[in-house]
Length: 209
Ligand code: ADP
Ligand code: 5GP
Image (cartoon, rainbow, N blue to C red):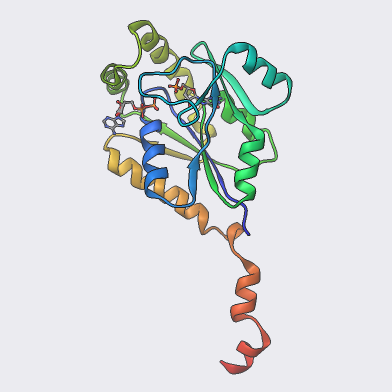
């Protein structure tokens, strides 16, 4: 069986990556969202083990020291990390996996042997970004201010990504993200050469047709 692909999706907070990644895993087969560990407190409606694994700093640092994260970073004052074992297990099983991680985490993945496709989601403007964070209603004014400040640093990193998607009209951004994922699935590196050989390039087919 072919290994699954890894898709790294980064964006400034509020650009819509959670919304887009959820649409992808709901509407596309064979792809799932990697569930990160975080020391951030759950937002209303977030569920432990579905949205994140919520842990305290002590537990998180124990995992860091145990080498359990393929990448981890401090983002907006909280720690976030991706379990190496879980990710490798799923791609070995042929599942595609989306990692919704910040630009520091993406940089750490780029430095490793792991093959991945890097996608950056942009908001249409800073004003819209601010409005989305306010409308989401999940963060205090202070937190929103900090996230908007960090947004500029994150956007400055877009050149290191393979694809840039502007999330203005949600359905259009979804179509673009889906196109990136589907094109990866049909790339030559994913082709089952053995199957093509058996179906078309065996001596019997060559004699018969
Ligand atoms: P992120 O995960 O990047 O922080 P979210 O997915 O939580 O962002 O989106 C932030 C807010 O913006 C949410 O309330 C979401 O419903 C809304 N949103 C996302 N994409 C769009 C869009 N294209 N148009 C309008 N609102 C959007
Ligand atoms: P939020 O608190 O809004 O859910 O996420 C804040 C930021 O942390 C987002 O930029 C998100 O992509 C990032 N993030 C979430 N999980 C991880 C992770 O496992 N590693 C890293 N490096 N960043 C993460």
